[in-house]
Length: 297
Image (cartoon, rainbow, N blue to C red; front, side, top):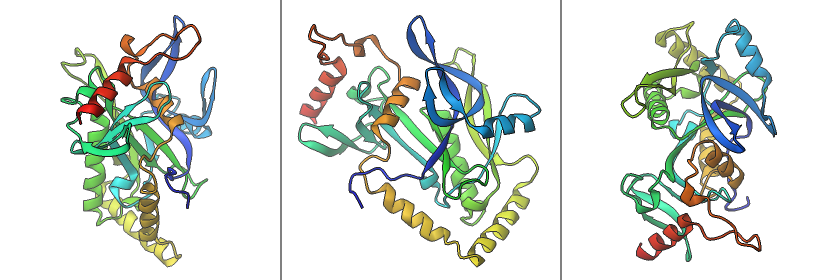
């Protein structure tokens, strides 16, 4: 196996609650109050819609798509939801620093180093919103692919906190049968003082509307037994995924990082460094700040 290669579940689609729009010649993120399912093909007009998007909207009688039936690929909650504090290089999409609030992996002049992670609230490198929690939830949808997933990416604390809690609770309640539970992604709204009482939307995970928790767990037990009888080894799948995630220091690519900074990370004026006459990019204040933090670490 090639080392330092991010090996993640095969992605066959995206789940988003927003998009990037062009205004006054600038590409800016715009939030939405519904789900959108897309392929991985992006054109000048945006991401192409996945066929499941139209099918689910028809089931919703043409209304807004605010609930999606899903299953998890893994029993282990931490394999389904990957989340860390992440600082991206805006120009290249490379992760500069990734941490969990206790320790971080940071790119330095001496290479990748493990350092204390004080979290974005107190880290000098994170000022200006450059470092954010970055979560990736992988879910199975439909029956067209056995191990392919749709990915919901977010930098929102509300979504990450809620999804992490639900995954752990359902894992405990079902006796570890997370991969066979019939679940649904659900869009919820709330307002806070920080949002100036305007509604903000986040993603929740629940059992489906047509069932109860007791019935969902019974279904999960039946499906898990059926899979075992057919020779499907869920434990081995989780072990293989855990090994694959550990094959690289970061389990996402630079291309993914570029999409993330465009959709979620604010582009402050200090980061919009001009170029010199020979078109060589000037050193940005972010790069200078990173260098100072490396020297003081």
